[in-house]
Picture 1 (cartoon, rainbow, N blue to C red):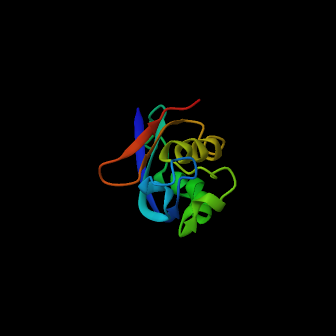
Picture 2 (cartoon, rainbow, N blue to C red):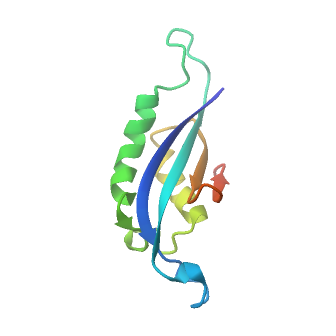
Length: 118
């Protein structure tokens, strides 16, 4: 069974590897939405796969590193595309959430990416 938890953060970035006249080369910000999916067996006694509070707790240190930050200055996010943000989050969450099976990063209501692991 899969469960998911949505978490958000606000951040600014620019994409350093696009042509200088590309709109994303300029500093801009997003209200990011991250959807964390965890897969596991249903615990018969508790009735859940994992406590949503545990997912929140695992993400909290990352939230502190991402929220209201300039992402280009975050180590490992020098080119902070949605795809790179998804991989960055995965690498840091997987040890705390062994059942992690998918990360979605939405930078707008209409755009984002899905990462299913390495």
